[in-house]
Image (spheres, rainbow, N blue to C red):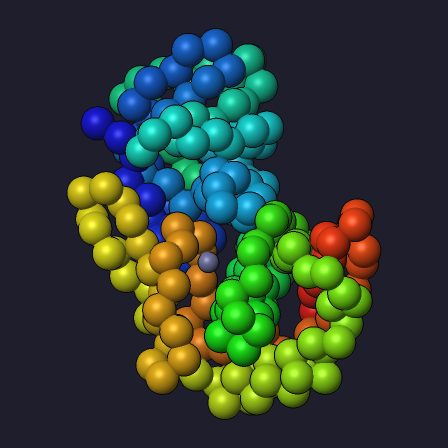
Length: 213
Ligand SMILES: [Zn+2]
């Protein structure tokens, strides 16, 4: 059995009662979780399992393996409380969705340029493109459209595309439907204001950095 990912059903949950399903050295698995493990460029959550800080969270197929200090003393069958650092996660969720909007606008309005990288942390998100010029040329358009989408406080639906394979997508009616297994906001208005910054990361490679303003 693999872990039930409650961070999808309720990405706003900050505490969850769960059961340890295995413990070997510092590695622990649980029956259900709210602590996200690095995937799709979105960083892992900070948090605790049974009061022990999560040092690392790694996906292994549909399973998630958490690393705790080897002295955790937990055993299979133990009841534990899982907590996450919500302030960090909420910033990540806002930046993640801002990056989703920027990427989708680039795809829709600039001929689907090749995405060559992406990363979402709590201080900033970045999306990298193969782009032969200064990508700041897109910023007047992007800034206006991003703010329009945020200002419209549009509902974001997050659902399984294929539950068995754990493929998920988010959708905004009239805008986009995009495959992604990250944790998504309920509505665009939660993002607030964002700032865009250009970075040249190599010949023909341009980065858009997004911060919460
Ligand atoms: Zn996403």
